Length: 254
Ligand code: SF4
Image 1: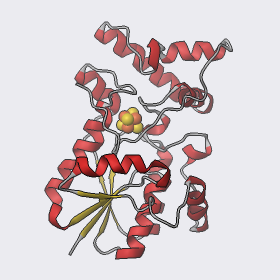
Image 2 (image 1 turned 120 degrees about the horizontal axis):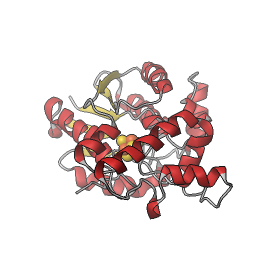
Image 3 (image 1 turned 180 degrees about the vertical axis):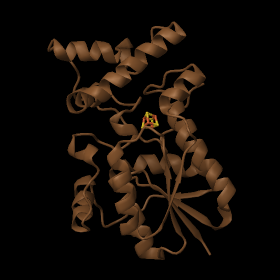
């Protein structure tokens, strides 16, 4: 019997993908796999519980145990848009180990929540993951964009993850992401100033720890610099949101 593993991210895309998988193949051999970075938004767990119950398949939650910041300090490397040791360690390699221990590539199909607007991501991911078979049900017709998936979610009686309502493009790492741009962090500062302050201090701490002039954002702009710029109404690139695809975009640290 074919095992069907949906990489359940806590976002609407992977919920919609799981719905299509279960509609096509049933829930009995479908598993929803969530990798917890231990830095998730508290509402993610509410969404995970409601969304998995709605799909009707088994939910498996795994965690490496560290947070992204603990990985950065341990590896003496601050993640950024070009290198993401956090998702490499806490998501991709962890999920790979779980697949190796629990499934056989000969009778397993894995699914991700990539949609038709991001076809290039599954085109890159699928050959890289061989012999595991990876598919993206939301790249297939009927085509739905994120707005359409959110309407579907609401029709099914599930409240979207609160981070979406707060203006975030994803529901990962509690609104934080080392791949994010100025616009994303400006939204974090506006919507959750205490959480921004936590990450700002962590970035300062790792700069002191490594004795290096490094930053998450491009061009040496620290989160402290960005906050001051915003407070002083300086010029910021609010359209630089950045991309976060923990499972699908490998930009690993050396
Ligand atoms: S969401 Fe961003 S910070 Fe969190 S694990 Fe993924 S790449 Fe790292």
